[in-house]
Image (cartoon, rainbow, N blue to C red; front, side):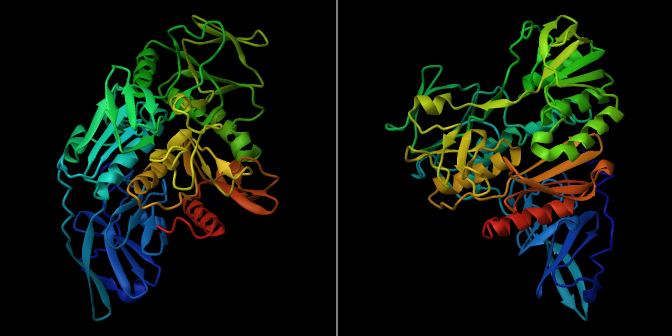
Amino acid sequence: MATEEDDAPTGPDLAGGIPAADLPDGGMIAGHVGKDVVLLARLGDEVFAIGGLCSHYHGNLAEGLMVGDSVRCPLHHACFSLRTGEALKAPAFDNVGTWRVEREDGRIRVAEKLPKPAIPAVPSPDAGAGRFVIVGGGAAGFAAAERLRREGFQGELTILSAEADRPIDRPNLSKDNLAGQAPESWLYLKPQSFFERRGIRLELGAAVASLDARNRKVALADGRELGFDKLLLATGAEPVRLDVPGAGLPHVFTLRALPDLRAIVARVDESRTAVVVGASFIGLEVAASLIARGLSVQVVAPDERPLARVLGPEIGDFVRAEHERHGVVFHLGHRPAAIEERAVVLDDGTRLAADLVVAGIGVRPRTALAEAAGLRVERGVVVDAQLETSAPGVFAAGDIARYPYPGAESGTARIEHWVVAERMGQAAAFAMLGQARPFADVPFFWSQHYDAAIDYVGHADRWDATEIEGDIAKGDGEVRFLRRGRLLAVASLGRERDALKAERALEEVAGGVGKG
C-alpha cells in the first residue's frame, strides 16, 4: 500500500525547466511541480505533462511504457492518455492531472495545472436514452456502469448486485487487507456518493431470479420485475466448496467477498494454526497473509508443484521456495479426507493442526441465470467479439463470458482475471452504446507473494515449449510460453517494464489491438 512518503516528489523541478535535449522523442522524465509528481513525455514534436503517479495504486508512470500518445503503468498495466490524463483502461478509473507545457530557448518548462473536466451531472430520468440494467456488482459490472456514464449515456442505469457491499477491488481481499496491512475502507472501488452523482442506481442484496430475454425484463427474488432495453450479465464466479466430512464446520472458509474476509479476520484473533487447502493463486496469497498475521500455516494440494499448470515448473519451484522461506509447510500430492474441529486429516492419515481452514480450490462461473434464460452456454456464456450473447441486446462480461480469443487452442477463452473482467465491462459499455469494437485486449494478471510479484500477460491454456531468460530461482527472469512456435504468454518476476513490452508484443501478434 503506497504512503505519502512513497509519493514524495523526486527528480527535477519541472517548473524551473529542463534542457530540451534531455527529453528525446519517446522519452519520459519523472519530476515535480511544487508537491505534485509530474510525468514529462515527448512524442515527436509534442511534449505532454500529466500526473506522474497511476491513480490505481500510485505506480510510477515514468517506469512504464509509452504506446503512441498513451502511457501504461508498470504495476498493473492501467493506461492513461498523455494528451488529456484520462484513464483509458482499467484497473485505473480516475484521471490524472494535466499541465500546460512551454518551450523556449532550448528548454522545456511545465507551467500551470489545467482544470479538471467537470464531473457529469446526474442524468435526467426523461433523457430518453433507454434503460440499461447490469446484473452483477463485481469488476465487469462496475466498469461497465462507470464507462457508460463517462461516454455520456443519459438513460436509466441500474446495477443489481446480489452482494451486500458496494463494488470492491476483489484481488486485495487475499492480499494487504487479509494481511492486516490496509483498512477495509481501502477495498471499495468508489464511495456511495460516486453512484449518486452519476445517477447509477446501485441495488445491493438484489438477487435476480430469472431473465426473460425475449420480453426484456428481469424478475428479482423479492418479486419485483424490471424492464430493460439492454442488459449486461456480469454475475461472476463462486468458490468451489470442499466436499469432505467436516467441510461445514464454522472454522472452514472460502474467500470471495467482504463478509468472507471479515469472518476470517475474526477467526484469526483466536487462532494459532491454519491450513490452506489448494495451492492456487488465492490459496497461496491467503497463506502469505496469514503468515503476516503470525499464524503457523500449512498448505495442502494435489499438485506436484504450486501454480505449475499455469506458470510452469520453474516459477512453481520459486513460489514454493519463497513460501517455505517464510515458514509455510507444504503437503503436496495430498487431499484432505476430513476436517475436524481442530485438525485437517489428509488422505494418507496425516493430521494437521488447524484452528482455521481456508479453501482456495478454484471457482465456477455463475451461469445458471443465463442457462435458464435459454442463452447459449458452453463452459461459460458464449458471446461474440462485441460481447453480445445469443440473445440480441443481452451482453455478458467477466468470469462467465466465453469470447473469441485467437491465442486459445479452441479459438475461444473464458478467463478469470480481474483486469480482464474490468476491461470486458468497459468494452461491453461501448457495445451497449452502439459503438461496438472487438474485445481483443491481451489478458493480464498479477499475483503477490511476500516481496515477489508475478506478472502474467497473454493466455496459454496449453503449450509445447518454453523459453527462459534470467534467473527464475533468484526472482529475476521471465518464462515465455509457446505452441507450435507461436508466443502465447509471458510470466515474469521482477521485470515490470519487460512485462509491458511483452504485452505490447502480444498485441502486435494479434494484429495491433489494444493500441490505447
